[in-house]
Image 1 (cartoon, one colour):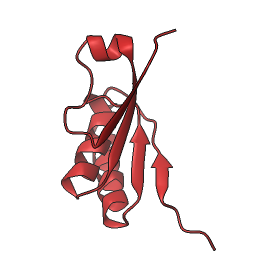
Image 2 (cartoon, rainbow, N blue to C red; image 1 turned 45 degrees about the vertical axis):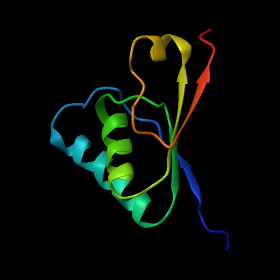
Image 3 (tube, one colour; image 1 turned 135 degrees about the horizontal axis):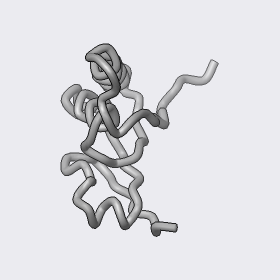
Length: 90
């Protein structure tokens, strides 16, 4: 059976209603790092996406962000990612 090596994550750029979503995003990020599963996500530092990336990075995980030029120009790129792909804004 193949093992999971990379996961794409997509969730809100805000924190949702209540702390349960924020906790779940952080727990998922920690679990990915603990299992040496790489995360690819939207590349921002905001909301649930930021919490997911923060937890994965804090656990020593590898996180790649994929962000548009427009969002990068607005300063939304997470500053501690292992890798960033910048795509044209359409």
